[in-house]
Image (cartoon, rainbow, N blue to C red; front, top):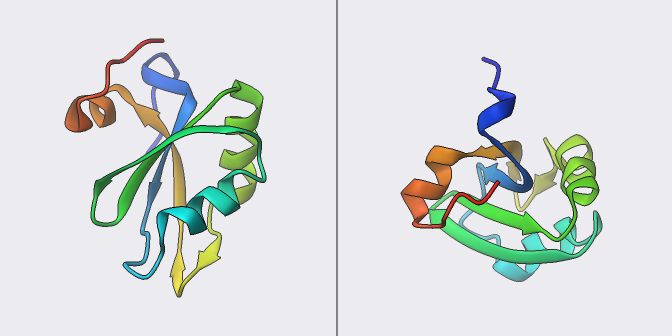
Length: 94
């Protein structure tokens, strides 16, 4: 299923299938490889929003960290959509 480019964030990724063993610092370590992470917020038990300072860094993480094996789980990385922000209470700013 494709995602509508006009409703996607260019700086925020939705990371799914996170193990309950994975700590915030583990995610920050892996995603910081792409570039400066501005904010990490767990929105559900196995889902987290990760905001980058730069679009190019988010794009790198999207391409290179999807399907990363971490703590026994395979991460799924997607561009965040407007509904992901509403669920968490962040304001859609793009």
